[in-house]
Length: 218
Image (tube, rainbow, N blue to C red; front, side, top):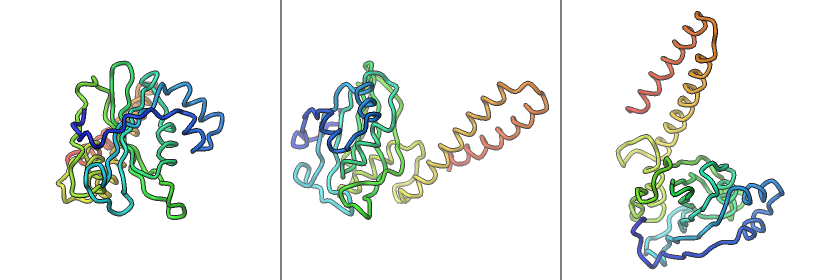
């Protein structure tokens, strides 16, 4: 799928109870894993030893996990719980109903606990046929650059390579917020009975869409 060197291959199934122990999972989290997850496979490990790229900053390794789901609907709390427990960036390959999608968190090391990360945001592709999943993973001269370039490829915003990732993430957050606001306004317009109120809501929607368009074209 990613044409990675054989040296990076792990291909090891991780029992769900290992996550329960690591996470000190409560009943609700255990139920989430049971209802939504079929299996978790540790597929690849990107590190100095496996691809000879140096660690930099708080990125010492990058893991690739295949998560076999029982259906395409899943809770992001599943990924968030794993990301909080494992002190490395994780690229998820989510698989369900002969479809696949990629997801990765932008996360930073917890300053008060070096073995945990703070998850800032998630970025993902749409569901698509498994054979169409593509990602140029090994872009960069060190592991931090590889991690940041994986995130860049999953954003809906595009920019020159010299634009800081933090700038792109801020723009993406504004795009996501405006997109949700537009969806809510469209739903309110459909439900509204009074004509003058529909007009007001539509004007607000057009303003939001114009702002969103500017961000997407930036």
